[in-house]
Image (cartoon, rainbow, N blue to C red; front, side, top):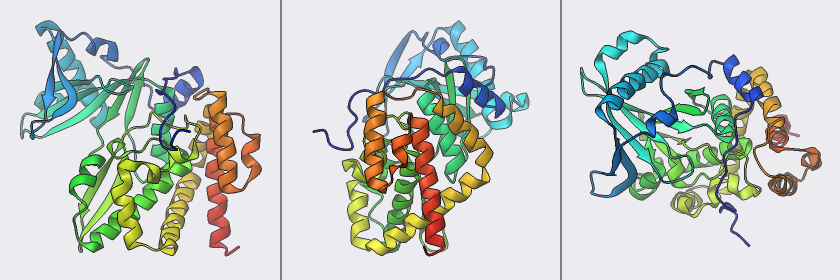
Amino acid sequence: MRPGGIPSKKKISFPVKAPLRMYMRKFGRDVSLPVRYGDLMRFDNTASLIDEHGEDTLWETAYYSESDRKDLHKALTEIYALLKTDGNIEVLEHLSVARIDWCSFGNTHPFRIRIINRFNDNYDHFYVKKTDASRIYGLELEHILSPERITYMVDQETLIEEHIAGIPGDRFVTHNLKVSKFDQTRISKEFVKFNERCFVRLLGDMRSYNYVVDITPDIEGNQYRIRAIDFDQQSYEGRKNFYLPQFFKENNPIIKMGISLMDPETVTQYQLEERTLIANRAKGSSARLKLLLDVMRKDKISSAQKIEDLKRELSEHHKNDTFAKCKNMGDIVSANIELIIQKVFTQSMGL
């Protein structure tokens, strides 16, 4: 029997169909881009990108012919302007492409574009990827139900995503847990809330390298926010535990720390707080969320067997037969969100 946190096999990509494209067009996500993913694949060669510690980053810097390089750099700065300034071309005068990196590791083989400001040498990144319906649903649900807003654009087979800043989770777990007990408690609290956010909207595979931690200095200690950066596993797998970050061994150091600092009653309190926030966000964007879930219900983003497995496991978890009526992953996500909102209501009423 496979462990609860291990996917059965490599995640497959799903095409973006007309209803989802119409949804994206309605909310300004579907745009015309000056360059597409396939254009970036025309590199002449690559070289491994090594970090400051001399370790392989699993990214490769791509090199292009001089003619391709000029055209690509111009188009990529225009895309950055679309992401950041709604296409204001005045910013292009002081922006340039510092590097184009390609990752052959994983499912999506993304390109990471480093943009540099020539006035102050400050730099930023964005990503060019192949479209996958699962990932787009994941991005939209993150935009609607999480504390953060997400910026991305789609043109045919090309997906553009903004860079989500923060310390990579695997590095954070290794180097940033030796802090004051006060900060350790805040980290543990945030992980409980992150765990809840992933489970409510069924975002899977949140191992430490699939999220970042944003640290904000506060009056006393720091505030921590965990943000997902990989949305490929949006409601695809059939195992409930796959959608709970607490079950991935990569997250064990935070889990063990939390167990030593918080009692079950405190954990329950933090779960209720986050569910309440999610419920408020869902209600505040009810029309957009309903439209997204309606599109999702008509789409195929998983297999029949995984759908049946997840229905059974969620029914057992919630002790509720609502999931027996679900026909697809869109139904399951909708039912899971609705159940959480109902729980918040009954708990707030003391029922």
